[in-house]
Amino acid sequence: MLKHDDYLEAIRRFKNKKENAHARHRYHALLLVSKGYSFRQTADILFLDEETISRWVQTYQQQGLNGLKNNPLWGGEHGQRRLNDQELTLLSTRLETTAEPGTRVGSGWTLKAIHDLLVELFQVAYSRRGLRKLLRALAWSYQRGRKLYIKRSEQEQARFEIETRDVLAEFAKSGARVTPLAGDQTKVYLEASLARRWNPVGQQPVIADGARTKKSENIYSALHLGTGEETSTLVIDWQDSDATICWLEMIEKQHRRGTILLWIDNAGHHTSDEIEEWLEEHRRFRVINFAAYTPEENPQEGAWKPLKDEVSHHRWHESMADLSKAVDDYYQKARRHTVNFLERFGYFWSGGKIHPLPQTS
Image (cartoon, rainbow, N blue to C red; front, side):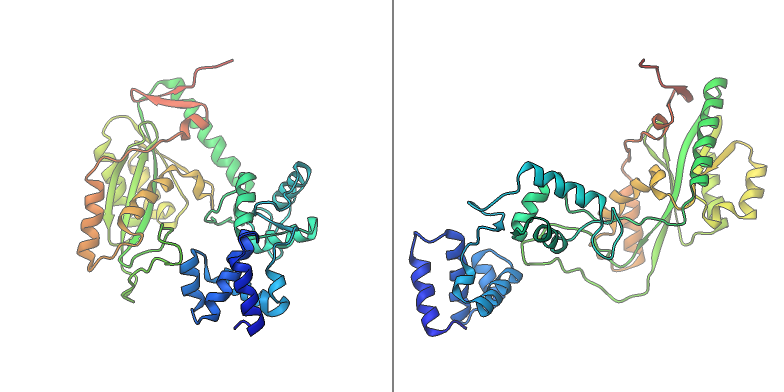
């Protein structure tokens, strides 16, 4: 791959300990590729990634050996220019208040887009490693995205918050016994689901896929908003009005005293005529619906993550019986979570009753 004269010069520069260490690293990579090593083998030997090796080879092909020398405008390496405080502030502001081309503000940035922005703003070209260091210094991290439900309504959100505050104030004033619960449903699939996992660099985790039908266990559960305990967990083959009624009956049997104050979403099997009729006959329930398209409001949503991490993510189950056993084994242990839903509205639960938070002022 290296021309004969370039090969000899690359050897000389690589052996010269006075050369910049980062540049010597690049010459070493080209020498290995010229010896017949693949990009992957070279990356493994030098503890790098294939993309970096490919980029260095491309740079050599376009600019020659001198293109691999350290450039004072490159960032992220020893002795190279760093952004000053004023530049860092400008960069942080731009990243937070503008969007990567083709996206919306708040939807995140790729390293490539940030690299291009730095070149545009400061004529500085950072390496991928340097960009990661720079972003960590700005208190940014690499995160999985979540959906923004564009159909959500400010009026619906206001309705939910007013209704919640009113009902909590009512029970705090009356002193009546109440069990506050947040309920939800989820599916756990027979096929292994994918999630982030740690693995050796360059070795992406490989998850078995049986190419089977999307068979799943449907799970109903509620989170006690006073104790953080998961309660009334029902594993069933489907999610519909009949299944929801079975779950509500389970809740009623497990919490025999006082009113059951239940927050649930607006799914069709929660708001159907059958459910409305059942609730009319079971007056112990007071149901408040979360605002539509606001799953983050429901504390029970957070309780599904450890379940799926233990039972579903990267887990292979041979049969539905194996999956059912894994779910059952998970719930054999008492599950508690930190919940601040009531505190957010100025109340807490103790001794079976709702109380206002003590005034701190």
